[in-house]
Length: 276
Image 1 (cartoon, rainbow, N blue to C red):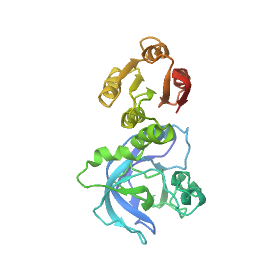
Image 2: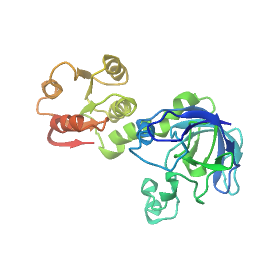
Image 3: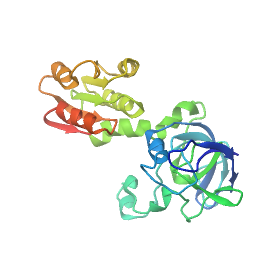
Image 4: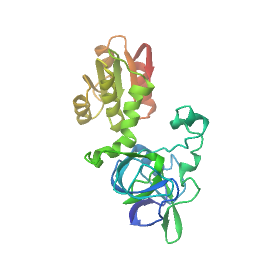
């Protein structure tokens, strides 16, 4: 099967033929229908988040189960699944406390499967995994990263559920705990930021201010629930937001990871406000 392989940092990915081993215990083989492209993948390609090379990137995938490994229950070939990017062991202290996202036993997932080996190979050489390695026609993944979904739902849209949607919506609902009547500002309206907007809308925020420098993104943010938009390339965004919400917002979210936008986000919050 074909995959996009990173052989060297700061070099282009190369689409090539790879061999794929069948799934082992606790694993699934999935034929990818779609994959998102996340900034984290770019960080790996640039060497900012280094990993073992060569590697197949991609962690926002959705597809159809091809084969079920030994000991895996609840899945059958033909099931439609979306893939989350972080597995969990299910038995460490954090998992048993109901915090699988804090699992203590996932250090192996940087570049291999749980047994320390790779399912991807090229002419006898191991090709490493990056999370679900969704930049491939097929991938073998830990079964705990797969979520069965209604086959009538579009896999091209569900792929984004694995990272961008859960990160953005989760930030609003589970991290910041936005409540009905709260005011919110979102700096950066890419995949994550737009989903923060949607999460804030779901939570019942009355004022949601989207901040970006791209007019098309601001229009999309308005369609997805923003009540106000601010073009940060046209004047002082802090003054503009505080003009809309005197005293500053209850929750300010930064979805770019740049020092200057982080500083902007801090300046948007009012007394007792939270930054995420």
